[in-house]
Length: 380
Ligand SMILES: *Cc1c(COP(=O)(O)O)cnc(C)c1O
Image (cartoon, rainbow, N blue to C red; front, side, top):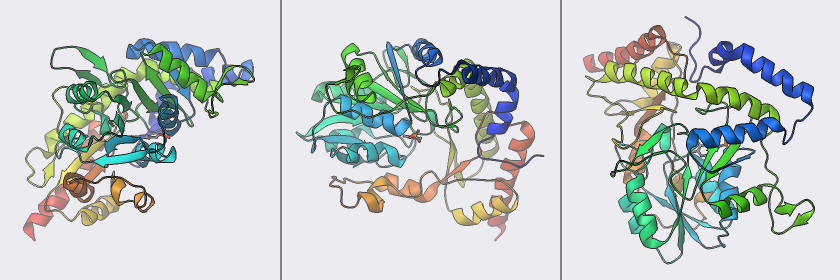
């Protein structure tokens, strides 16, 4: 068996090599490296796929968050509610603009932001809710949209881990992750579900006016060349990445199915273990498994990681430190309610290799390596 990896980018590339190589060469030969026709075509294809009116590409997923917050015109001191159990970028974009990240707890089962905690954190300074669709499934968007309407708040969905997931509202309406709130953001970092061969990101919205502001902020605040109406940034997706993403987008549903198949294999292997809780599904959301993240109970996590590592099985802790416990955020004023679910998760979670190239052999090897450790542990 070839060496196991958390994400098998090489295996995925081998399957689409001919298409990718041709597309890359064609961009090289076109010399339209920035804002070329590939970027426009990708924009339109992603709009179609997500069912949104506007896709505005940018340089990465962190920029996507920052640009969206800038375009919404929030002022320093305004509060944005987000989960403390997430990748740093979500809270970083808020803090960087002088806004106040209000970090709240997640649900212990889905690991997504807890709507009750959002409601409890709302103050007269709250301007937005930024749910993160963590590990590939949507947060409780029924409740989040309800809360946002009641309190007149903007909703920005951090969809960096959940592009291609869909959410079915209690009334039966179905929408793609990232197309539900005022805006959705994503990252095309290579290991994301829709990844390019470098950095990239995008913002989605159905709001014409907001789309215009976002495009302006991403392009030095200019509406017309050399006429700058506001302070912006320089954040672009280059043509080469767009060409690669156009190809990968055509395979995205098939990639999500491959991830779901691997997840089902893991689920089945672990279903009788009292030490493992497999990822709990939100019944309103599909799950596209950016990560397959276990919750461990009564297991020495570091010992398990070492055991797996000895067997050549990589594993990762997403995330070992919650945002409210990060050194950088100690001085950033934020109200901390009860974050015990988050704190417990940071010591319980472990993610196993998840990508589009698993075979029954790799999955069998990984799961039996995990179970071997747990069985041994029972004997002790
Ligand atoms: C990856 C990620 C980002 C940031 O994306 P970059 O392209 O690396 O800037 C933001 N939020 C979440 C939840 C992510 O997983």
